[in-house]
Length: 342
Image (tube, rainbow, N blue to C red; front, side):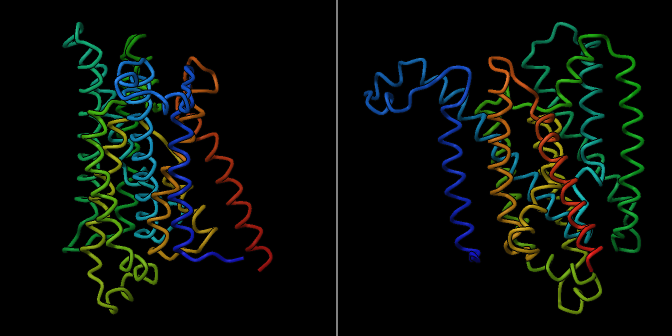
């Protein structure tokens, strides 16, 4: 039985709502949602359950959903721009640049301001990570620009070179860090929504949502680019404008996501593949569906991260890799089997 795009969209929205409701009731501390429904507004606001739901779980769920949606849709957009289903944002150096600046922040701030508060340290790490992602993508974009055109192959090579360089410099800072700094670096690099606040949601939310909206405006252009850049130009697509827009917006979204939650892999790589299995590679459907599925996946993964070893938490980057890695291997084996059959 085949489902229309509209039916799948409605199903994904419904699944997202159900996921949010289920997630509100998951955690080390059990909250009885049914009993809360019978309380008066005064009793609810005065209860400890209100604090748990509204100040701890809900901002965490919202930030996880925004991050999953942002990473998934940027993965789909970059795969379309590169015309390569194996591409993801880390390919152009965004992740490694954020990692380098975050490591620098943790190590240098520990030397310059050894008595800084935890909140100030987290804020500086987030700010430096975002700045690092922007610096990295600027270098990649600058190196790939020639005679007014952005060369995709050069961008790929520049991204690999920048990634190698920033990873080496990060290694130097990690080598020079003390035990506490090394623990902070390790924890940040594994990703977590444990410290999510409404402040983070209000900062990251508008940027991610506007970025998702802008990337969706490139759906028709990306469909044309999949045929080839010259073919897309014959169809009236401003290819250079599209490539610049996709690169900058994707980098902005990924930079904000990394700044708020640390490094979370495989989402931008696996989710678009999963959507292609359902309904093909039409970007009018792929982009929106990837965003919704990415949000659902990230919320459910975070639920597992905070309950599997409760009351402790497992870094979400570990779980996303444990889920995404085997799924991606299955995709590779499936594609090889299909090629062999052909």
